[in-house]
Image (cartoon, rainbow, N blue to C red; front, side, top):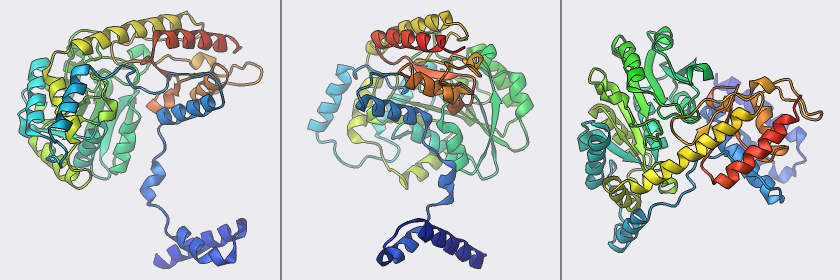
Length: 431
C-alpha cells in the first residue's frame, strides 16, 4: 500500500513538472508541495452557494454593474442600542480575558430563563453551552452524535451546511424531498418510510431556511409519534429563526416530554437581534451531549468572545420590542415579494410563515431560452438572473431542491421592488 502511494505521488509530480514551465532550481520545493497534499476530507467540502453568489455579486458591482443582492441571509438592521451599550460597558469594565468554555454563568442563566419564558422549556444551566455562532453549535452536536456509517435524516429543503457537517463526521445523509405542494414540510408518513436500523440523527429547522415554512404544534406532534417508535434516534432542532415568525407563537419539538431527553435545541443571537458578526450561538439539550460538546469545543475554540457574551445577556433578558419591530418589517417585505412572484407567469410560490426568504419554484422555465441563454436547471436560472436581470439569488439545489431558487428579503423595500421589476422583465424574455 505504501509503495503504491509513493508511485501515485511520483506520477503526479512527473505530470505536473511536464505540464508547467518550472525553473529546475525550484523542483525540490515543487515535489515537496505535491507530496504534502491536503486531507482527503476536504474533497467533499465546497464553498456554500450563498457565499459564492454574494462573491459574484461583489465582483460585478466592482465592474460598475448595479446588482440587487438577494443572496445572503443577513439582517439589514442595526443591533438595538441597548445591546450596543451593554457591549461598550463590558469593554470599559475590563471584560477582556478568556471565558469559560461553556459560557459565562450569567449568560447560561439568561438562556435558561429565556427558554422558560418564551418556550416553556426547562433547561438548567448545566444543560446549556454557548458557542461562536449557531453553526458551531450545530457542528459540535453533529460531531458528538454521529459516527462513521451512521445515517442522518434531513428533510429538503435544508440549510446548506447540515449535509456537509454530517459528511465531515463520516455520516451518511438520507434526504427526504418535501416539495412546494407540502409547503416544504415533512409528513409523519415520509419520516417513517425513511427510518432504518442505521438512523442515528434527524436534523431540521423551524422556521426553515430557505423555505420560511413553520411547523405547527400539531405537525410536530405527528413527527413525535414516529420518533416514539424509534427511541435511539436523536433530534437536532435548529430554531435560530424563532423570533422571525409570522404564524404566531413559536413551537419547539423539545416541548414533548416523551422525546425531550434526545432533542438538541440550537439557537443564537444572529437573526432575532441582528447580531450576525458577534458570533454567539447556544445549544440546550441532554447533559451528556452538552458535556460532549464542551469537551470538543475546549479543543477547537474554547470560550466565546467575552464582550459579545455580556451583550447577549442584556439582549435576552431585556424587552423584545426592537426585535418585534424588525419582525413586522420582515413580514411586510415577505408578503410583498411573494405577491409579486405570484404575478409572474410560470413562477410558483408558497407563503412563508417565518424567516426572511422566498423560495419560488421556477422549474417551468427549464428548457426555455431568451435566444442567448438557455435555462436547463436552477443554477442556470440563478446565473441568468444575475447576469441578465442583475439580481443575485441562490440556486435551490444548494438547499436540496433543484426546482427552486432562494431570495433573501433581508433588504430594503426599495431594493426588493427593484429586484421584482428586474426579475419579472428577465423571466418574460424566456420562451
